[in-house]
Amino acid sequence: MKLLFLCGSFMLATLAAPIAARAQSTSPVDAVNQAVGAIGGADALRAMKSLTFKADAQFWEPQQSYVADGEPRLIGNSKITFTWKNDNDTSRTDWERKFEYPFVEEKKYSEIVTSKYGAVSAGSSEVPMSNIRFASYRRELERALPNLLLKALDAPATVSSLSNQTLDGKSLPSVAFSDGNFKFAILFDPSTKLPAAVRSFDDDWVYGDMIYDLVFADWRSVDGIKFAYSQTYKVNDIKVGHLDVKDFKVNPTIPADTFAIRDENQREAKMPASVPYQWVIRRLFLGRFLDSDAVNFPASAAGLKLIELSPNVQFATGGSHNSLIILRKDHLVIIDAPINEWQSRWTIDAAKAKYPGKPVKYLVLTHHHNDHTGGARTYVAEGASIVVAAPNKKHFETVFQLQHKLVPDELQKSRKPANIIEFSDHMTLKDESGDIELYKIANPHADGMLMAHLVSDNIVWVTDLYSPVRDKDRTEMFVSFYEALKQRHIAPARIAGGHGGVVPISEMEAVMAAQ
Ligand SMILES: [Zn+2]
Image 1 (cartoon, rainbow, N blue to C red):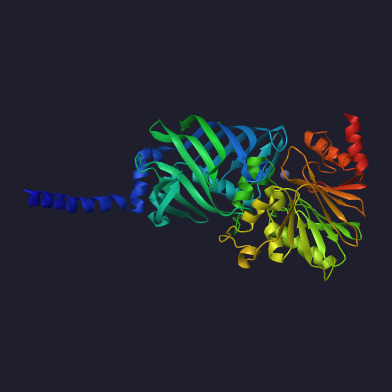
Image 2: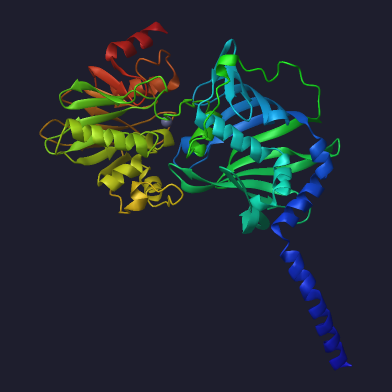
């Protein structure tokens, strides 16, 4: 009996094994097919010629946190109205945004995008999108719409096998989907067969190689199509956006002028060879995107330039973010490394051309935010020591060790250890050409924020707390910087900023006196 029982078990096991193996090795196309079925079927998706939904949305930015690697900064709340029609893959996103960061303000604008071009309208203005914005919008549209699965189903050659992907600690069956420039991993919920997330592998100038997910939940059936009423965007599993969807409608009546773009803005966009997707997407979330294919400066500008503040001090400006170059007896000091490697390379090359034979010995970083440090790795590759206020050393140790294999930067190509100097309250960079005093500032913008005082030229460098020329309001940030000057008994002749320009201290005194 016992033997028979064992034989029986063995028989069951051998019969069961091929079935289990088959279930585990669902072909990529079958997985897509199952997901199409779960969402409502190919016929229902094909019959969907248009859709609309509304959403309440929130966005966060982890690289604008108060404490480096701390809680992501809440940017604010938005109301979204989205309309799409399959004719020419045309869509419109209307935004009503209430920002809490970096400034309390409201913005209303619309993005209207066809398969060929896109425009942004606000009030009576309408401008064509930059190519990088157009490409990013197109990619994110494809990621978010249910007919992504239909595209995959109709072109099986675009679908290939992929190892299980991990989401929220769960290992999920996944397929790779490639549509020209756009490459995604589609992760499936094994119980419902619905897509759990659509993932891309992106380059970020701080995080390096990273994962970007749109995670779906709260699926509801509307007119025979299931639609995710909860849509969450994640960067390396950190939430950066969340949409609470309302009023999803299939084949709604759409007003005739919904997708109108002025004739002069109907310029065919060119898909760039490489798109800094994470910069575009998250600067748009932040409401501070410079809509320019030059990335670092407006399309209308000639480029970056040096403005001489004194024979030893050059202001690197011309774009959205500035740096300062200071000549010492036998080396250079540079303050802030904005945006990306391109800007660092430009700044280092310009500094060396202006002051030949002087190596960049120190890069001083005012604070950890990505838009002023995204180019810091280039300085490590250059051999410069990095100077930061506490507690930022730990953050930058990690940043300089991260892998950038997707878009290799100079440090990835030539890896070397970073020398990071951290001070707690005050530090002097001594030199016979004059001292540079660095002071940590108590402020509401970022922990470990510093200002720099070039003593012999009596120039103070400040980033974000006050943007000279641009800022006219006595904000909390403005006051924190003003009080830091008073507390340290500094009366600078001029103030130069990480944004904006250079002003005499009388500008700040006028703001303090006016309100
Ligand atoms: Zn900042």
